[in-house]
Amino acid sequence: MSKMSGQSLNDRLMAARHTIAGQGLARVVCKATTEEVIGPKKKHLDYLLHCTNEPNVSIPQLANLLIERAQNTNWVVVFKSLVTVHHLMCYGNERFTQYLASSNCTFQLGTFVDKTGVQAGFDMSTFIRRYAKYLTEKAVSYRTVAFDFCKVKRGKEDGTLRTMPTDKLLKTVPALQSQLDALLEFDCTANDLTNGVISSAFMLLFRDLIRLFACYNDGIINLLEKYFDMNKKHCREALDIYKKFLIRMDRVAEFLKVAETVGIDKGDIPDLTKAPSSLLDALEQHLAALEG
Image 1 (cartoon, rainbow, N blue to C red):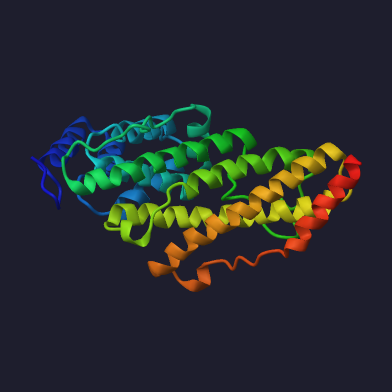
Image 2: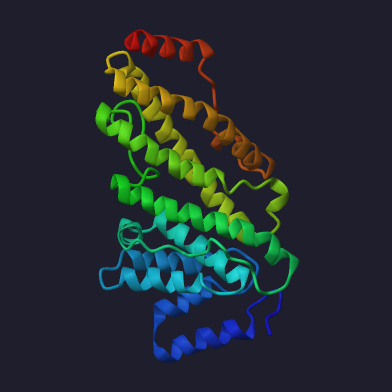
């Protein structure tokens, strides 16, 4: 019944049903996640953002409505539901992310395959599975460290990871690494960004990546500053973290190349200057000396 563009009859019926029931929230969730092949509309996202700050709005109801929409068989509806969830995690009240983290809910899209029978649906299904995995990982890392890596203070003076004590830092950076890995696994090329839905997902992922990487950098600088005063066990862990960081630098650079290709302003793309390899040698020699 559904058409490729514009709202389908299904979309209209769903919205009408919610109007009759007077469920404003459910209606807007449906409107944000129609079968129209464009990213969720700003006015619907703004309304839902506003809802996350309203004390009388049930955050579990809002989250569950979106998770329910993500169980649809149409790739467009599923992808737009995930983009909407991501948007609310980025810009909404933290209560939304807290709920996703505490309720341990997953999107259960690990085996998602579009049922509309169009080629685009087949192509997009891979990215939907990866995107759902990333959003789940974003919630898991919030549950692990009790803050959002994309929202914490960064920088020399009072950056959260820049000023963190050693014990806590060695537990926190691996959680950040897991979230970053899940983001990089989205792994799209500029040629994959063929419609407004995947493009809006990519922009939110780019936004997260910039913030995650800045946090990661803070954590690594902090580790390196403390490294030569650490005990042997901590040194071993820190060296392992630093080696993983070097590998991820290359993967982040790949992602940023795609961002540049699709016309994201160069000024928004961080410069990834590599530390000299002599630094790694010095760290390894220090650990070898400790291990005698």
